[in-house]
Length: 155
Image: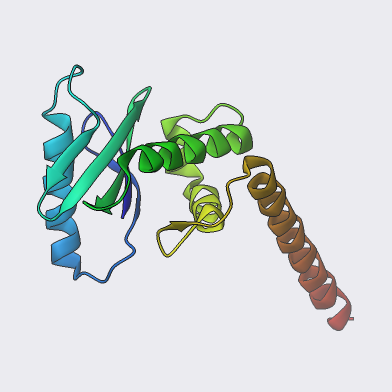
């Protein structure tokens, strides 16, 4: 599970890699956010929660959290968070909370390119950005082709 939220506890990005009901998702999200927001700035970025470990990092006004099994390496999870933020920063050219609000599709597309079923797919930020840009170009090509087909089929 990956969450991004602001200091007021408003969720800006959430991705669940396990099946939960909507009620469970809401309850778990609320618990996690309250758990992280109640911690002081001098505490470490790892919190034991239920049978999981919450690994979080704060960037400006946003918290990014990955929930992992207790057997997973927390430092690798921190690195995954950092790399995702670096990729977002590259794509959005200085990422901010408003980018996640108004252009959330791009953030989720990057997340899906970066993590598949909760596992990191590629360690190269450049490769992920390149694949993202190719996907956007392909999507534009499809939209233009469809628009041209509709234009000429109406003649």
